[in-house]
Image 1 (cartoon, rainbow over the protein chains, first blue to last red):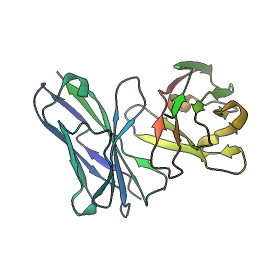
Image 2 (tube, each protein chain N blue to C red):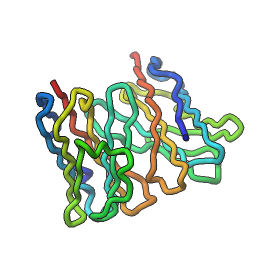
Image 3 (spheres, each protein chain N blue to C red):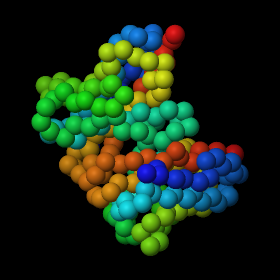
Length: 113
Length: 114
């Protein structure tokens, strides 16, 4: 079965610009997660969706980050405006249901200059 | 707040040697415990998980981990390391019993020498 797909794989932007990341979860997976992984750290959960509803966005910096999951399948994560400290790998994961093992995509590496 | 500690930032072992990566957690009850591996440019892959029951857990790629409640530890082991095991290893815990609220450690980078 196909894994979690993410695009783009790499992105370089100037600070104050906006950027968007796309994630396509494993087919049939109801739960979708976005993580931020800063260099030298473990991934940190930003937002969790169950179908197209938000379950947990307590660690999402809502003044600049937004995410949506239309129709309960694909998801986009947006940063507007970007800051230098947003440089990180953004990982998308999905699970069949809530409380199931998470499967991760390859990530999008963002560099903000 | 729950936390996960991986005390070794970087470990180097020779191919064929045994491996143990340490993971300690701070939480009163027994959380769900996971080990993930991340190869360069790849996403995280689940190696194994512990929810309850037998404290020695077998995973993929010949890895195993042992849960020790008295030490709040969940160390990852492999009896004979292969060069392809070079990667970053993350321990993660979930105290909610849902497998959906993962807190990751900072990772241990494994280097394998030939």
